[in-house]
Length: 206
Image 1 (cartoon, one colour):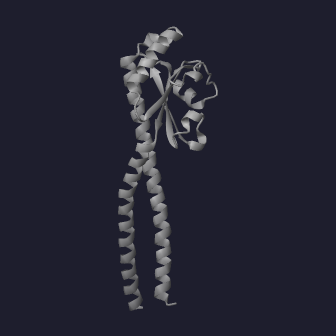
Image 2 (spheres, rainbow, N blue to C red):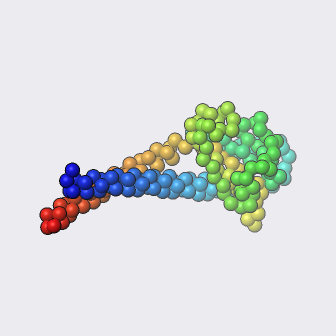
Image 3 (cartoon, one colour):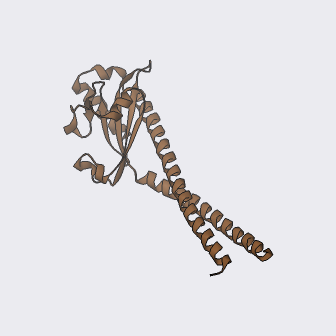
């Protein structure tokens, strides 16, 4: 095997390995950015809708009154993507959900609820294998966003946890990755060709 061919093979291996790592990093960056955007959008949407549709006093009212208000709230915000909501008080305990059998469950061990009660929106990505309940297993991938609900003085009244399908976000991520990946491959190919030509010129002079 000639020296030129050996160098080309080494260069090709480096290009493939480097390109694979570059593509991997690119996908992760796109995915993380999309998830951050989704988390931020959910926080803004839920807090804005809650401020319009829910009076602050409802958090101190009876279970029946809360159920009426929260059910109306969910009817207004639910969509093909947003399929479940859990609403927690500061105990924390689930005081309402469209999955009625879980109302009353305590969530003292839920770290994401605790984080939201401290005023920070929390986010979880879940797959089929991590689904908590049978009713969630119809979704291969979904997200859970825990949004703190604030009063006019920015005190946390409670937490709303929304479940959303991940299908559309995943499509957006894949489309962005295909576009960016194509650019990366073109740049790698161009760099590889230029490197070959430079190496060939150098070897001719030796």
